Amino acid sequence: MIRDKAGIFFSGLCLCHCLLTPVVLLLAGAGALTNAFASETTHQLLLIPVMFLALYSLPVAWYKSRNYRLLVLTLAGLAGLISARFFHGNLEVILTTAGSLFLIAGHLISFKQCRGD
Image (cartoon, rainbow, N blue to C red):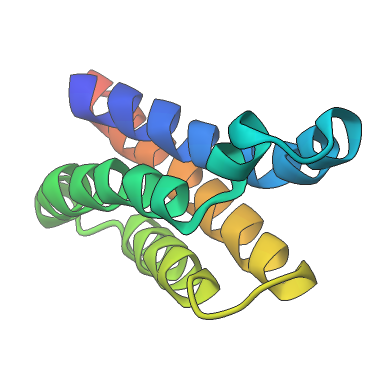
């Protein structure tokens, strides 16, 4: 359950970063902080815990439940986040947003199953 909460947190952080980067760049202008916020290294550092938590917690939940919705959401989320790394601009934002939302939904399903709801 803690893995799902952490997965939701990091996927949500990824989503917020993706949606707020243009706003931060627009309001703050060019500078070290905004460059760090928008850098490729930041994207990679956010992607690592998101992928690790998804690959660590969600397959176990799927194996126990055989819930295909959980499997499809997880795979679609991972595919969206990974493929977003190869694009820039609007398509990157769309893929990251969709991927993050899919992973959050997968973690929520997993969390509910672990609680027995």
